[in-house]
Image (cartoon, rainbow, N blue to C red; front, side, top):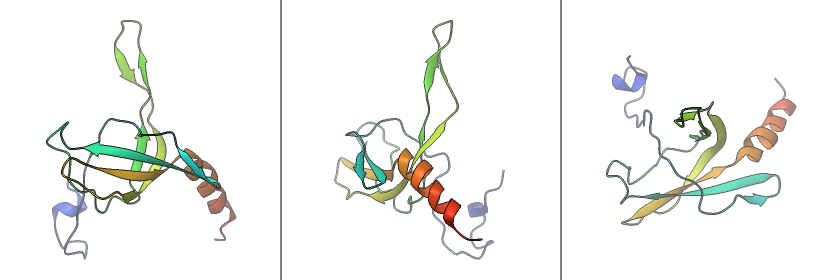
Length: 123
């Protein structure tokens, strides 16, 4: 498959930064924080766990925060269910030598607040 960023300059942009299939497993440090109708999560990223973790996630705003529910089948094997978009990244915390983190809007912000705002928008 040819991705648009595999041919620099072909789409009118001279510099493109992309992460294809960038993923990680983990959870938030604390329960979501509610501010008004919005909910927010902070997810830590530790560099010591894997050597392939990017030091900076600059440009990740708008990236998806996906939850992948797991279930055990009759044989005891874990399998994934349908992934659920559980948030949207909007901020990278300052980096240190050992970690950084990203902040995300949570499900209420995406499925309630954003959905209602889109419904009110005029075409």
